Length: 360
Image (tube, rainbow, N blue to C red):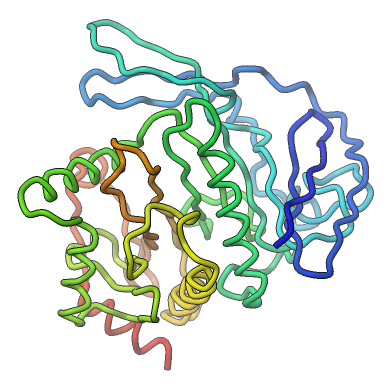
């Protein structure tokens, strides 16, 4: 993949075109009368009862909400008057979110005194469009297109990890109105946080404890046990393994691990990235084969920096769905939302068996 082609949007945001071999992007001027961006559109507030930061981003109340297909802001806009992508066509694009939860560069520090503590909402939020086809999905992408998305994730991971104050880069996709998606065009998002998110901090703490007590890496040991057991493995290649975790919390949950320890996408070889794109796509194809309608899901890429604080991190993807049957959803109600105590209505082993069967 060649370096992406940068293009300015009407309000000064950056748009990047990632192109397949032989394709040359042809953007036009963005002629939309967009209001100027606020320098600091969000604020962080510290919750002393949990030790967690909360992002306040009131401008996001005005973000685009379920527009008709002919007014989708993620479809190509050849006139430059309506779309976030002012071009007649594109392969994959990444651009700064018009309604970001985080923006600006700079480090923050954890408060250690009582009282109300706030900080600027530094960081960056980007949108990544997987295809110009409004009706498509990641599972339906041609192999080369899926591989280009992975290349874009990798490039953005490297670029955002180099931004001052960024502690964590999170690539993710939400698919389906049941999940809360407001734009149906196939796309994902990339967040660059100025702090470690709570779940990441918890997993790293558990990994450090595991290393101190048992030696080795927690995630690598877990993967080895899943492979040895085999009951919940749904697909495996030379470089990657997909399995339903032993203690799955969601009705449909699959984890995709590289077979060797790397911290993020930038540490994978080109061959491994090829396999990653193929197996990632395969997991989602199996998801959509479970029922008569496409499965709503979240796909979360857990990435870590090469730093002392994150030394035990192990890159992996978690695919999660709230659909517990063909006609029923699993709502995260009192026990899950208030207490973070998950109750699951299906066994991981039965879900793994169904996903293996879905490939036939």
